[in-house]
Length: 188
Length: 437
Image (cartoon, rainbow over all chains, first blue to last red; front, side, top):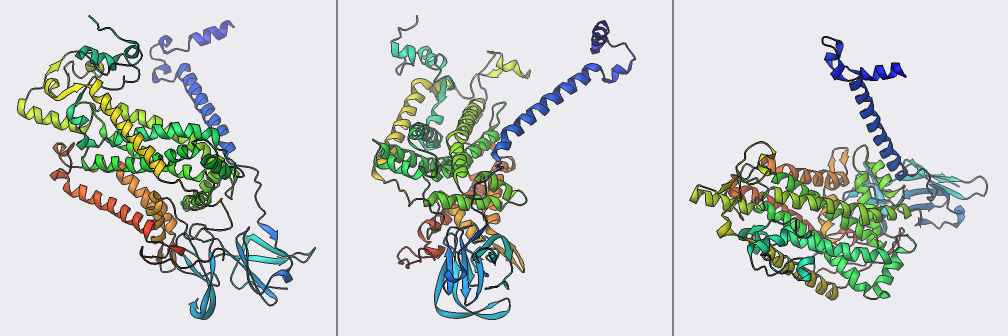
């Protein structure tokens, strides 16, 4: 105890003998000062983190990104819009593909517009006959039937998603977390 | 001998002071008025100089706080009940329609008035420092810009709460603009929404921002704004007056009258007032207080009448399955909606999303420009505190052109856009657009 008191008594710069290394400012007091301020700042930072971190959710109760959309036979020829998941499923005889209805500009739901007259457009340098297209009500983006953006502010084509057949009941499984390219077709 | 004070004067202040001393006491002895100067120049009180736009904004904010606090008792921030509770407020609660109307009209007017206030301050060059020491008007201008941003955020978070179609798709577009920010964008969207989809987490976040954090921020910034006006020795027109007087008289009365003068160790001689007190100033009580009362009453009456005359719209309940066609933001954000529409850049195979250019880059540059402008402004100080000074003609013109651009984009968005955001003249009929797909 006595030695501690003696040690503490030496701490202040007022006590420092002339010509000692203490003159450079490296006293015990400055060390304690730094430790104190450092601890305070770390404490405040920790407190802030503990207060802000709960705002980033760890558990979400959202819809699954991979879901069963029903038996393939239940889909009519042409387009079916799955409005809860915002995705179009297209059937052409026994082949299926899925195109997102989420506009790539700012996330509004695009609407499918059937064309009165089919028109031939150049997609990727090839002439393609299109019967319908997609248009966004929020900012006027337009996409051809295969999702290729051609007018308005959309920066990229609509996503295509992977389709599969569920092994247990043969239902069509749409996976919104797995984009695929435009050649993807599921044949059932 | 002190005049006999009635109970009203004891609790508040006298509206009819008999002496200058009594007038001064009203300010010095009263908590509500303590932030006013004892005397105020006629120039500052002039309607034609400031249009009292700052005061009107403050009155509108007070109205919003008042009606908002009552609405908080009636509104339920849950996705299941929010829309119904707004319907109850509108159709079942006694005077609910009026409360909601006043809240909505005040919010719309506050956006307009705060914006006009900024335009007024720019056009009069009132962010320039004048002749008094320790002025920092550029800082107060920056606080004002922050207040404008808070006002816009309050409006944005506010119109989300009814959880109607307008609300839902505004959150969709607004948070997707945030996600267009490089690197951290997706993370910001996730935190704003409280997940990946717009749901209960999102509503409660915007509710807390709207009812607590943003109003507190406005209150804090407002207090700072007012305090700076006092520290800056009033409005810029006072400095202008002081300069004119100095040219004529070359002498401004000085006094050694308080510790304030030596607080910074500069001088013990402090100008008692920037201007000749006898000829140019009047006691704040009742000259300022009366005008404040008039402005407050006129604002409240105007808002009330508008709330009665104009219906408060409510769109269909939020439906994530259907985007309205066209999906339009409120008028004060339509220039931004138009901007994000028109600014996607395609350069060869390289594409920059308009969400980033029009939603983040251009608004960011505008705000940055507003913040730094007082430091770049090289116009003579004599041009400050007066409308359309010749020396400021060029920068005022550029500023007005920017204001005009915002107005033109707002008008295009409001009146000339139809289904699928196509361009229609007002006399063109809109075609039948598909409801679903």
